[in-house]
Picture 1 (cartoon, rainbow, N blue to C red):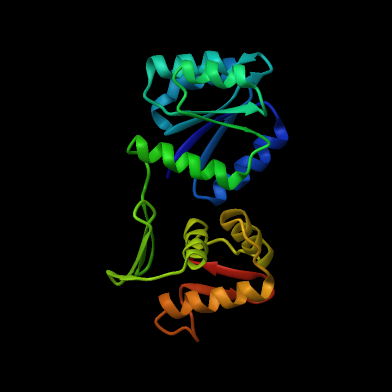
Picture 2 (spheres, rainbow, N blue to C red):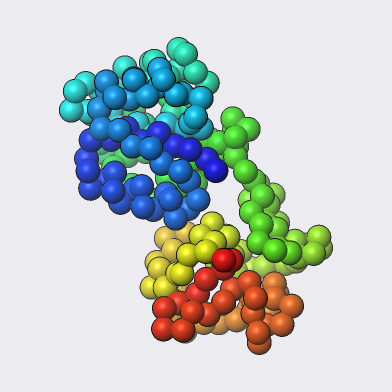
Amino acid sequence: MTHILLVEDDRSIVTNLTEFLQKEGFSITAVDGQQKALQVLEESAGEFDLILLDVSLADGNGFAVCRAAKSSTELPVIFLTASGDEYSVVTGLDLGADDYISKPFRPRELVSRIHNILRRYGKSNTLLECKNICADIVRGTVKKDGQEIVLSALEYRLLLYFLNNQGIVLSRSQLLEALWDIAGEFVNDNTLTVYIKRLREKIEEDPQNPLLIKTVRGLGYKMGD
């Protein structure tokens, strides 16, 4: 599992971002200041795969953390910056940061950037699997029992969301929000029902008795145990 060091002193951002990233399959360790981040890097940098780093910290700034990370490790760094703060962006990139994203940011965009950076560093698990279904997120292909199957763009995005949240009951509102955020187009409740039905027809052995995408009565849907 990809382990991210989140350096951020805004508690609401830490709480919301940690919850979201954990649902996406990441492990998160959060610290709220420059000194704590430097200590963690000194003691256990090898445990992490990537750093999400706020520029402004209560006891210093993210630049010192980025400088330390880049001088002693090969960890990729993504800066979280205030919107329109061009100086912070330029300074961070000059220090070796791999990317930046301005606040307020769309969580799905951040996840996409994380995956892109991890692939660049060869750290990303590019295959997502559940039983006989395997999705290759780099090639954008899906195989069932080793044979490639064709999915529409929204079917593919819906499958990836299920694969990234295996074992978690997902409500219809969560799925609708995720598809809206990913696809950038309106998906209503009736459309969601249609897409789940179509997806089941392509990946399930018996779509009428699904074993991959299960209905949790009154709550939503779940993939995996």
